[in-house]
Length: 314
Image (cartoon, rainbow, N blue to C red; front, side, top):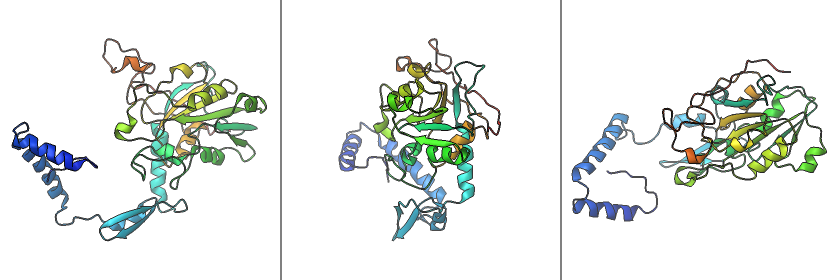
């Protein structure tokens, strides 16, 4: 009962491991140790007495679940609202408390955030502004995740629309050009960009840059309109080239289905309190870099995070 995460070429793995054990490259004691630890966990969980999950809890999932024999089948349905509201509220709280404010204003005396809820016309832009899939990252229904609104939730765009004053005009343009920006008189812009979903080796990246059209959107919008950039990513990315252009920068990580947690702090219903759980580098050439290294020269140090005071902004 040796378990390994080899989903496809498992026969080759078994043959190779068997060869290595028989020829004493891997001692049998190492295999016994691995099996013993797996069995210990399964005995502790009672899986030999009750091998299947407790299906009574599936009613709390945010999607439709059907049971066929011993299998659970997840069915996508954007019209289902099965997850308890108290669970969504907790997730929303986790989102707003985990956001990290990295920059707020071109100068410390002129902060951009919190944003006013009452404005004439605001722009929401970016590839990640209207996608639950991008907000959620990998391991979301599909192994590698997906784009689009694949399950019930609130995108950052819809959260903005719900938050601002009813008389405020919210315009969504994923990647506006200069002519469009010049022909509109926006009070400010919210640019939401980041990484596509990934898991495991599919996320390996040697440059850690924001993929296009993210950089183009930042340059076009923030070069013409006061803007806050909301970065959707599971890790720090290269942002130094854009710092001087943007007015405010928020690391939103992967907020999942509860985009309203982002607008909770953008518009001042709650203050920013989150701190970086790891160092944010200037360039990948600095990596690996950790606190205490002789070459420690980060863009934002470990534990960094600006704070704001709740204002119930109007």
